[in-house]
View (cartoon, rainbow, N blue to C red):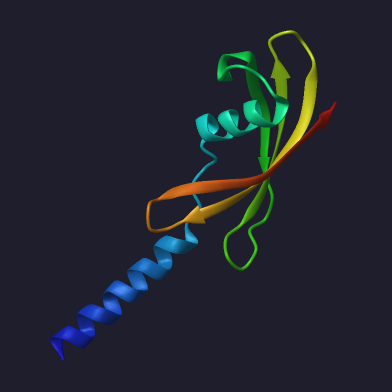
Length: 100
């Protein structure tokens, strides 16, 4: 009985932990944006005006933001942020940027 109760409690805890979506990790998002824009360093771009969309059933959200390069051009960017409850970090994919 004790093992079943412990298992159920752990399952509920892990399930609830998966529902909590962390805030966007700016450094990881900045690195992905730097690669998409073809810049040499993360120091060459600044991210601002971050906004998160509503999560889907798996917790995936669209993160929209503005990327401004060191030389001045601004880009309207978006990325998919998928939470990973195992390592407690979000994964970013489908980073897209277009001139603002």
